[in-house]
Amino acid sequence: MSYNWCHGPECHTQQTQSRVRGSGDNKVLRTIKIKQGGYNGYQNGIWDYFCNQRCLMDFIREHITSIIAIAPRREALETPIKVEKTKSQDYRYQWSNGEHRRVPYISTRTTISRVDNG
Ligand SMILES: [Zn+2]
Image 1 (cartoon, rainbow, N blue to C red):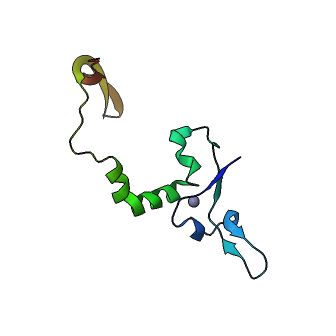
Image 2: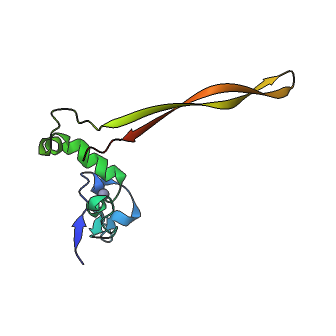
Image 3: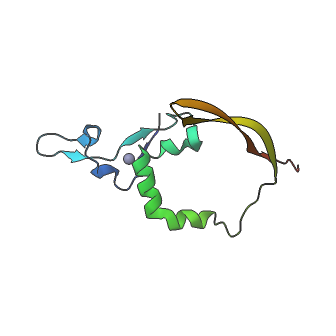
């Protein structure tokens, strides 16, 4: 079984029991060791490298410029869609004179669906 050290730059400073190592007066907080494949590739294996959300975000904050440089977005992407508006009879409830009244109105539902141009 192989392991990674958590890549969170501040992992070894978080004060949790799970990070305490050593004995007597020589105790330390140590970076969390993560078993690889523990989450079966969930989210592309991101959790093979980070022990929690905070460590992931700390890493991203520290290295954001380098991360973006790997795959910079220089123009907007577009997804072809179809927008459909359908009207239908609906009801709202109005409180007046101590009773609820059912009041009809026309509601508009907007549906966005992908257009497959493949
Ligand atoms: Zn961590």
